[in-house]
Amino acid sequence: MIDLRSDTVTKPTPEMRQAAFDAVVGDDVYQEDPTIIELEELSAQMLGKEAAMFVPSGTQGNQIAVLTHCQPGQEIILEADSHIFIYEGASISALAGVQPRTIAGKNGAMDPGEVQAAVRGDDIHLPETGLICLENTHNRAGGAVVSLDNMQAIFEMAQQQNIPVHLDGARLFNAAVATGIDVKEFAAYTDTVQFCLSKGLGAPVGSIIAGSTDFIKKARKWRKRLGGGLRQAGIIAAPGLVALRTMVDRLAEDHENAQLLADGLKEVSGLTIENNVDTNIVLVYTEDAGLRAEQFLEMLKESGILAVPFGPYTVRFVTHFDVSKEEIRSVIDRIGALAGANR
Image (cartoon, rainbow, N blue to C red; front, side):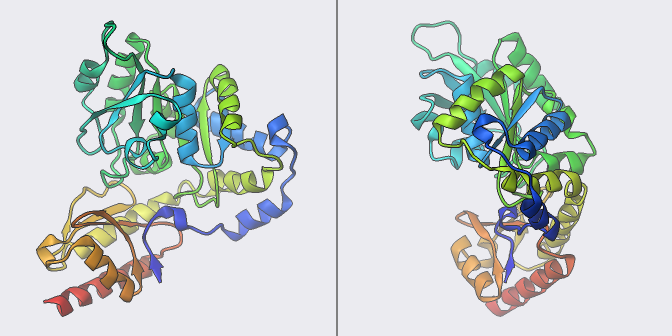
C-alpha cells in the first residue's frame, strides 16, 4: 500500500530508533531531562527565539499559545480555512474561551488590510482582539507558502496595535526549504511559533512551541494543566534532534515528488490539479471524471493507494520520506489505468 494520506504516517528512521534507545533521560516536569533540554535549546536557536518547549502534539502547541496569549472573552483573528479553526475541535472556544474571527485568504494568506480592519475597536459591545494567528505552510491551501512580505505586513501592524502574532508552523520547515529562506526569518515576524517534528521531519511524536523566555515560562503551566507534562521524555525527544539535524534539507525531495505527482495526474483525463504545488501537498479535483471524492478514494484503495478527502470532489495527496520517486511513478500509472477503466 502506498500511503499518501499525510506526512504524519512516516516511520522513524533507524538513526532515530537508536537515538531513542540511547537517550539520556530525566524528569521533564522538573526540567531535568537533558535530551529534552538539548532539543528545546536547538529549536529556539534555529527559530531565533529566546526559549522553546516540547509538547506532545501540534494541536496542543497551538492551544497552549492561545491559552497563554489570551483571556476568556477575547477574539482571535485567523484565516477561514486554518488548521486551528477547522481541525482542532473548537478547542480555542472550549478551552480558552475565545471566539474566532475568520478572514478568507488567498492561497492561505490573509490580506493585511483586511486583518487590520478586523481588529476590534474600543467599544463595550465588542470583544478585544487578543491574538492574530497565521499558518505556514497552509494545509487546506494545498501546502501553500505564505510569503515573508505578507507575514511582515501583518506582524508590523499587530505590533502597532499591541496584539501578539502566533504562527501555526506545523510545516514551517517545508516553507523554508521551498523558498530557500531561513526558518529564522519566517519566525522573526511572529511572537510565538509552533512546528511539528512528526510530519515531514519524520520524528515519531512531538512538536515545539517557541517564544520569549517569559512566554514559555507561562506556557509550561498551561502544558501541565492540559496534561502535557512528561517525565522521562528524552526517549521521544531524541528522534526530534535527529530530525532537525538530518531531515530538513531532504524535504526538497518530497517537494519534487509532489510536483512529479501533480505533473503526472494533470495528464489523466477527468482530473484537475487545484493548487499550485509549493511544497508536498497535491489537491486533485475529480468531478470531471464523474466521481465524488469518496468514490475516487475507494478506487484508489482497491489499487493500493491511500489518500484523504478534502471536499466533495477534492482529494489530498501528501508526499513524504516513506514514499519514493518510483512509488510516485507507480501511483501515476495506477491512477491512469483507473481513469481508463472508468471511461
